[in-house]
Length: 242
Length: 236
Image (cartoon, rainbow over all chains, first blue to last red; front, side, top):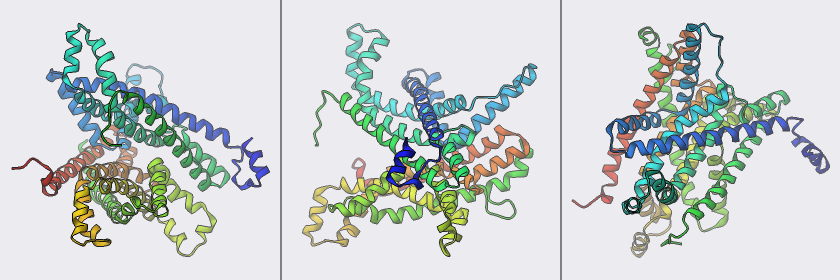
């Protein structure tokens, strides 16, 4: 459809040469990867933040080590380290147990590693946001007899989100761009498919620019969603400026 | 582990015997791109906050594109994409320029970090205290002098915390250079891994080196902040 449209417009040089579906698949893979990693990292971030804010040293110290180490090492290095080491350990294990060789699925590995890495960034975001909620709110919730879960769900979380959203948006954008690196561990994402299409049509420049535009589209769309969310979670607060 | 270190410590730190590799290469990539990005971003950030639409808009578009796409794609476009165009290959100046991996990598890195730095500095210029600028104007400063003596010194100081963040993110981003055959720390780790199959150790050493650079940078920036941002702290 896209190609015939180009033909009627006389822009045949912009044709996708039958690689449209491949690009679509890649885009879908990138979005899936980013969203799944977001879920994992938000979960890890909430856990990490509560560990960091807990009164028990046994929880605080590992969380501190986790965020410091992960945020100090480049995501690509961690990705290769985790991905290849997981594979080696797994094959050692299967060798030792005399099982068949299990190959780690690159998608699962990508989600686990990205989630694990960005969980550290989310930990810091959520820790700051929870601290920004006035203490009296939690105390009042306890005074009303809310359980720990209810207190978090109905009192802390809705107020915390307002402070966390700018950070969440930032982390999401960084993570979305980091998914481009997963093509290096063999996942057929947008970058990989654009490269393949470009190599087989000798139009590498065109397909890479197209991939860049798709990323731009996704980041712009997520900006719009984030702005909406920010407005929603800021309901009931006044802004001095603007 | 010991054998791995014995065989590869030199490559991890500075040379494989012929070329500059490892830590030295990573630091070179980082400092060169940060240096170019810094000096380009100063005029660009001033243009970014301009009241004139046609001055502001091109810079805004540039930062929007470079901050909205992954650095890896930008590097691929610079390194493989542009050189695949016949018009560039046959051109006398551009052809040799884009055939060189280092040129392409530095171009992509510098343009990328410049886009982020421009936004950081522009944000700092925008949050200038009105009184400061008014006082400077009252003293007769205008045009480039107003920027050179009052606005930029103040804006650059106040952007230091954000700038330090960007430098560290850039350090982390230099790791994609190995895809353009640049022998940085990660490339050495990959080579060591494929030669010895000691995966965890090879990448682990690389991770430790990066960690050490990050901590050093954080420490240096903390010193810089103590020196240049002392006026923002509590009064003694």
